[in-house]
Every structure is written in C-alpha cells, then in structure tokens.
Image (cartoon, rainbow, N blue to C red; front, side, top):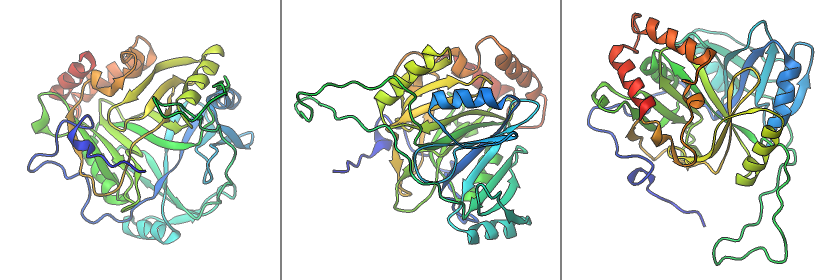
Length: 377
C-alpha cells in the first residue's frame, strides 16, 4: 500500500511560504523536461577516473582515447560523460525533454539551433547557456540503453513482520551498483536569477526552499527542485541550487538499491583507499539515505537510496539553512563536505568570498555573514 503523508507539516519543513514569497514555479514555462539525462566532466586522466567509477558502481558503456561514457543499470541514457581535458572541471548538465518537438520549441524560443547528438547517444540536442555562463543541453530521441542486472533488494524482518526464516543476510562487499543518476547540486553567485531561468525554461518546480537564519525577508538561498510530470511522482530534487561566492559544481548523486548496498559498497571503496566525505546518514529535505565520497579529482559524489517522490500538487516548504539540519541521523557533517576543510577547495572558496562581496552579484557582505553562521550552526 502506498502511504501518503503531508510531509510539509512535520520534519520535511518548518513552514510554508509567507505572502509574497517565491512561488517555486513559473506560470508559463517554455517546456517541461522529464528528467536529468547525464552530466559532463573533463579530466586529464581517463584511466584513473574510470578506475574510481567502477569501484563506485558505474559500468563503462563507451571508451575511446578521448572520452568515457558511464552508465547505471536502469534503462535509458548514460549517467556521466567524461572527456579528456587539460584540467579537471565540471562542464554542465544535460536534461531529457519528452520529445523532439519540445527541443525544437525551446530552440525557437531562445533563438538557438538544434543539432544531431553524437551517434553513440542519438537524438537531437539544443545547447543553452544559463545565467552563470554554464552550458546546459536539452536532448530528446536518444538511443535507449537496455536494462542491466543490479543488486537485488534484500528480504528484511521488520519487528513482528517476519519474511525471512532459516536464511541468513550476507550482503556482498562489492561496488554498490549504480541504478541511475538522481540529481546535481550547483552553487551560483546569481542564485535567484539562475533559479528563475531553470524554472521558466525547463518547467522545474521547487520542493523546498532554505534561507539563512535571520535573513528570510531577503529571500531563499537554496532550493531543491524537481521535474513536473503532473500526477506522476518524481524525485524530491533532480537539481538543487545554492547561493555562494562562486559558480561551481557542488555534488552529484546516484541511486543504488538499498542501505546494504550503500554500506557494503562504502566498505569496498574504503578498502581501496578512497576518501569518504560524509556519511552514512539520512537527509531531511528529500529523506535520502546518503553516503558521500571524493573521487581522485576531488569531485564530490553521493550514493543514495529511499528518496522522497512528489507529484506536482505539493507546494514548496520553507526552512532555515543550518549545517545540523542537513540530516535526521548520521555522523556530524564534516568540514570536507561543507568545503571548509584545509585544502585547495577551501582556499579557492575563501578567495571567491573576498572577491564576490566586491562584485555586482547576489552574494554581498550580509549574505557572507549568513553563510558563515550556517557553517558554524
């Protein structure tokens, strides 16, 4: 039986919107995308990237001297495309439209041209640029990859509900096989303008807004955004966007079968010397069981399972942003996850803070104080 909860009245959020606050959706979006298709990166060492990807749970769909395509077990498109480049960087996301007509409609509305996708993917693509200057693809008509085997969900004994007798529970210590790409989180110095751009162009809708404590009157500083498929429930967030001192990738998340896959897969990664950033725990916004890891190039990636699914009737929740409010249970949030551990990333972010407060963007001195308060909360 499907259980329906009014999650905006309990742990999901503290409260709904006040009069005049952001509605969390556009009145007349150009199109409504159906999902996040894949993410694109550049890295100088494809072999090293592929080694981690296999330990993390991806399967290689395509390998050439110039690029690697990584997929999950679910049918559909690849999850990640990595191209050889002089430096490690996140290039941008690709969203899946419902059909080619949507891609053509978006191209006409934005004054851009469509073009054929590479033969390895198929279909039609339009490439836009978001307010932060990041390329964003929208694609349709791609070649559909067949479903692959994945880890079976275990049979559990819950309290008095006994489903397993005379049988043991022995999850294999192996990579947590990725099922699909779940979401990407981006930071923007022009958060509100970027948020509105994605809602207006792609028909995304906000599940939750967060705001800096004491600064709610200035508007939200983070949003968890889902696809609008009407009465069909979709992931609590396909994309999340947060205000910050630089325009950058924060993390991406990939679904696996269950908690055992996350835990045993984490042991597999740990034994091979990879760095856990934070986990295992359960989030508040989205409810996912999570585990975060750093790949060899420093990118933050997440295993998750058991996330919330919302249809388009739920209005956004509102809650203050705090470091302790990132999880219902689990270890305390780490400095590495927050990006403030000593190292290259925190040094870059510190330099960005000093320059951002002098530039003409949404991250001013008051917002900086709010962010620093969040990291200490």
